[in-house]
Amino acid sequence: MVGCSALTFWGTRLLSDVRRPRLDYESHAVGLDHNEVGALLVAAGLGPAIEHALISLLALNGLRVSEATGANVEALGLERGHRTLTVLRKGGKVVTIPLAPRTARAVDLAVGERLSGPIFTRADGTRLDRHGAARIVRRVAKRAGVDKRIGPHTLRYAFITAALDSGVPLRDVQEAASHADPRTTMRYDRARVSLNRHATYTVSTFIAGASR
Image (cartoon, rainbow, N blue to C red):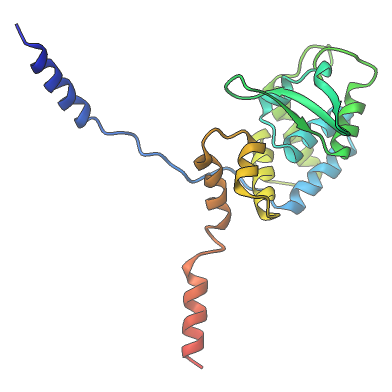
């Protein structure tokens, strides 16, 4: 019979031989610049109210598609002068977020006279799901002349990179995006600056100075 110490030894040995998967901390999502996001918002505003509200929440609040489609009319509120929406975040965390005035107006138009139920509904009155949301994003993108292959997460990605570009501190972006691990937010930051900070610019300037 094998003793406990032997089992412990071999168990430890086996665990040490297992290769841990390499974590990829670079974001490979399709990027949109602020002009493309602006074009999407304009195109959404020219369509049905539900499209404008959805695009606004994804692009201007950085919501996950599940957070947007899972939001209810009853979760809309007013707090210290801010229009707000309470959403269920990833991991079961409930948070209250502010809505920019243009987003609040878009959501109000999408809700209409309804006092309860999902903010986003399909034609039959049932809750819009993530697939329906993805179709809306693709439809608006086509109308806006954005020919990239995008989905709801593309707008969340655009929100995060726009926040970083405009100088919002990394910690505040992490909180707005509801990233539990700051390294997740840093992936977007690294992807954003990887070209801007490429050594070729420094080297070319250095060599140009020496070759005058």
